[in-house]
Structure formats: structure tokens, C-alpha cells
Length: 154
Ligand code: 4NP
Image (cartoon, rainbow, N blue to C red; front, side, top):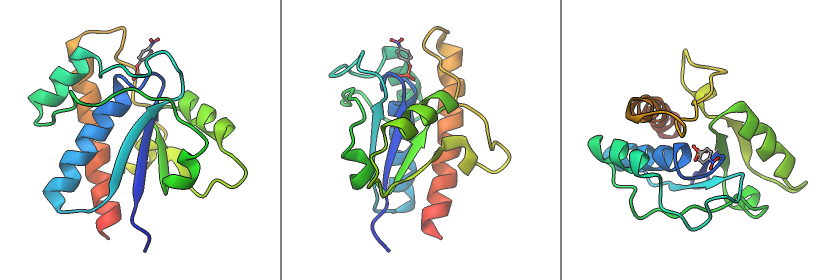
């Protein structure tokens, strides 16, 4: 099997997808799984920015250090480099599908579709909320990370 390469995509790449990247790195490390993991945004607002401080804090409280990550925008090459691209919500999935080149080799999907019992759900944008929202986001992306570990371990 090709080595899995997973890309998590939200809008700004400063809240949800860096948290998903952090949760996935942690879960993969704990499981001894050798996979490539990255995140990106569909928008260009936060290129080069560190994750939102509230996202960093939520990740830190849960054992993940995402302070060194830097925002970037998804590019066409991602569709050839990554085996799987997971959008954090439906609007970003639509954006990802629109961006996909004709020779895309990546499987595209909604992240929560991979979590039994949560199919079709979005990871809500915590950006305009409070710290409690970021904790909910962490719990959602962490559940997804655990489900993905199970999928790629099988
Ligand atoms: P993210 O959250 O997509 O989870 O990184 C957002 C970050 C920034 C903005 C919107 C959502 N923004 O409008 O700047």
C-alpha cells in the first residue's frame, strides 16, 4: 500500500485544520503509525500565520503542540501529493472539489464522514466563539483522528 498522506482542510488554516493536524499527529504517534500529515486552508487570509492562540491552547491542554505550524493555502499539487484530503465542513469540501485538478489522485471527503455515528456533520467554525468552542472542536477532530488511525491501521 502507498504510504498514506493526509491533508486536513478548513477555511483559514488557523483553527480547525491545524487542530486536526495536531490531533492526528498525536494519535498516529501513539499508535506507531507512519503517515504524512499536513493541513491547509481554502482561503488566503492567514498565509504564514501561526494557529489562533485559542486553538494552540486547546491543543496544548490535550497534549498536542501546534505552535510551530504556519498557515498555508491549498494548492493543486496537494491533490497529487496527498492520498486523502479531508474537509472540515461542507463548504470547504465544495471548495476543495472545485480546486481539484483533473489528474487529482486524492480521495476527497468530509472529515466527520469517517467517524461512525457522525457522518454528514461539520466541524463547526469556532473562530467567532469562545474557548469552550475550541474544546468542542478539539473533541471532534480528536474523534476523527482516532477513527482515521483505526482505518489506516486495518
Ligand atoms: P478556520 O477558522 O477555518 O477553522 O481556520 C477561521 C479562521 C479565520 C477566519 C474564518 C475562519 N477568518 O474569517 O479570518
